[in-house]
Image 1 (cartoon, rainbow, N blue to C red):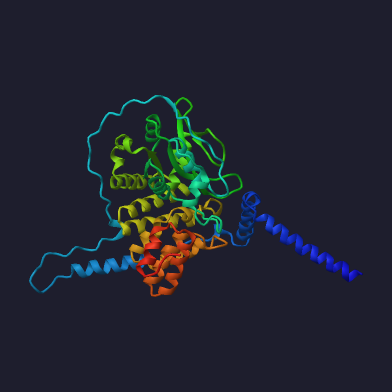
Image 2 (image 1 turned 45 degrees about the horizontal axis):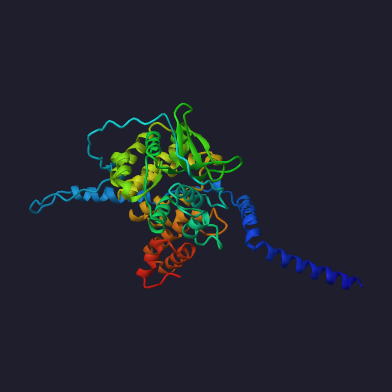
Amino acid sequence: MRKRFLGFSLLALIVCCLLGTGAYYLPPMHSRLAWRVANLRSQVYYYFNPPQEAVFVPQGQQTQIDTLVQATLQALVPSATTTAPPSPTATLPAETATPQPSPTSTLIPTPIPDKAVLSGIIHEYQQMNNCGPATLAMALSYWGWQGDQRDTRAYLRPSFAVVDDKNVNPQEMADYVQTHTGLKALVRVGGDVELLKRLVAAGFPVVIEKGFQPPKEDWMGHYEVINGYDDERGRFITQDSYIMADFPLPYEQVTERWWRDFNRVYLVIYPAEREREVLSILGAHADPEANHQLAAQAALDETTALSGRDLFFAWFNRGSNLTALGDYLGAAQAYDQAFAKYADLPKGERPWRVLWYQSGPYAAYFYSGRHQDVIDLANTTLAFLAQPILEESLYWRGLAKEALGDPQGGLADLQKAVELNPNFTQAVVELQRRGIQAP
């Protein structure tokens, strides 16, 4: 009798587990519980693998400098043959100069009101880790777009049902606007309070990406729609998918604290017929190259005035802007400085998720010939995750592996990157270059 009871109990337990598992994967239940399960899994993983303790140490800087110094010395050796025009001398990373934008005539800006609020935005609370798609849906709703975060998520996070994609970058948002709506969009960096106010006053809500640190959490990235401002109170009105609608955000928290963490990046959506108006408001920043030149100089200026985590981000932003300008040696040097500052930060202040959102260091190191640094940085970043689900890290690691003579390892990383995000054009193109169709 006892054996029969134990048998029935075991069978009942198995049936309950199967029913519970099946119920968990029902869409209504899964949407409510999945983020809790993922969060618990992450907490357990981070308990045994504290991400704050991992530090990436670039290895290629000294080798690079030694090579350049040797090239310079060889170029300076006098030749016994007929004198030829001097060859260009190699430039050390510290001497890399950033082109500055040409002076332009200064126009007196049209006065704007002390307060403005744009209405018509449909607020949405984000689903699990769905800040980017939810924020984009809110911004689009202002222009009469019919949809919600499920529509934007299908493009921005296509593998959501399989894995938890950690990042949606502003350019991906702009690509969605350009390809899936009748609107246009542009992304720029180096914004400031006055520019945000002028855009809002002209009728253009602005999406910004900034740092965010909820209570008892580590640093992470977050999007918001700015749709109003109030000079008397010194604050913006924002639509925040995590906190609330009409969330007040003081000016200083934007420019002097959290926005710096993402190079003061912003996304503007607008009808095609109003493009001239948007570009006029942007002024010198309308041109992408001038925009990054100005932002690179602003970041360099900040390195002499900041400390702690803000100093890390100033050097990081310098590297990101130089990467965008194609100055990879200068960018690599700036990132080296950033990672050195990162190592000096107290563990509790380290923004260890930064490579989830910004992949500029990979390009800088790769195109500087520092392929092992690319692999080491990707390994460090992916080690923070219970699953390797950052397609940008996999993409650059794949290229670096191939460059160092491991084509099979590189191919596996590229295929995984496309599996995670079939809309990741760079990885798709690399597979096609190898004669492989993306899955």
